[in-house]
Length: 317
Ligand code: BYC
Image (tube, rainbow, N blue to C red; front, side):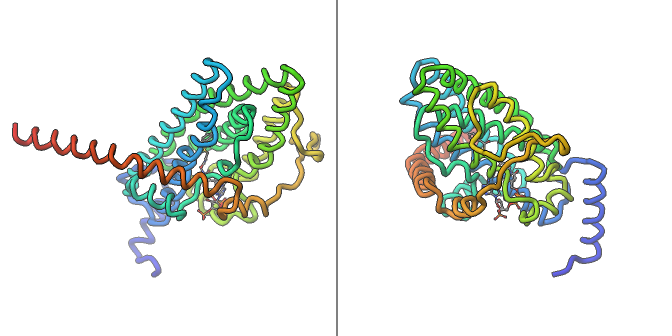
């Protein structure tokens, strides 16, 4: 159905507000497509934080020292917190966390491709912190300026916490890289496996990204997928040199004319497979999430019963 005259003028006024950098707040009028795009992105982001607890969480019991265990516990707990801020931001758009969790478990909403890869060794915890959190911060720093107020504000806090996460990953890998030959090899192997999937986190190339043009016009996205990917590569290459680890790309070299590092072709077929549910760990991630939801049902029920009792006490008083 084409928009009515008043809808059209409202859309124009909305776009003008966006163009003059006003943030959109929950009670403001917004086009239905803006609302659904925002819900899609925030939900995907929230699910990524919660599913992202699994690959690292698997190493909590096997951390090599008490110090490392405490750091990893705190990091995984932070991810749970990020998921909660994000589900709360989505709720301001009129969608319940329960609904979003059901869509995730039913495979009808996405989460980041990166969390469908396994964590095979302890060095993977370092590679996730350094590369995956590094990629996440690059993307999320741009999102602190996104047009939807509650999402932008959640990003500010999340970015502060993510930068600790990135540094702990760097520090962990630095220690392994400077350690024994076997430790250095383990760090290198983890970087070899996480590098390309980290570049895929930024999404398909701009020319093949169906959502970028509209999301840029609404200032949901401030920087395109390819530009963010380039920013991440430029930031990470000198860090790899400092770590004395190689990035597994023979085409990676400084391009004086562009003022950026060139890098080799990304295997987009692998990305499509992983996003389409055929990555190494997709089934495991969803079945663990489903089991956690089922096993936690009694806690939610007890909380609701307690809340109901408190309410009836208050109204009786
Ligand atoms: N994985 O038109 P496009 C973290 C989908 S977690 C899966 O470019 P858009 C952390 C995309 O959804 C960090 N799917 O889309 C946690 C779209 O599908 P639909 C998570 C992907 O939305 C624990 C289709 O492909 N960060 O920090 O304009 C431990 C076409 O793409 C991916 C966020 O979620 C992908 N990588 O741009 C450590 C950031 N890429 O829905 C760390 C927020 C694309 O049309 N999200 N797709 O069927 C965004 O910034 C944007 O949504 C994206 C994609 C840049 C990811």
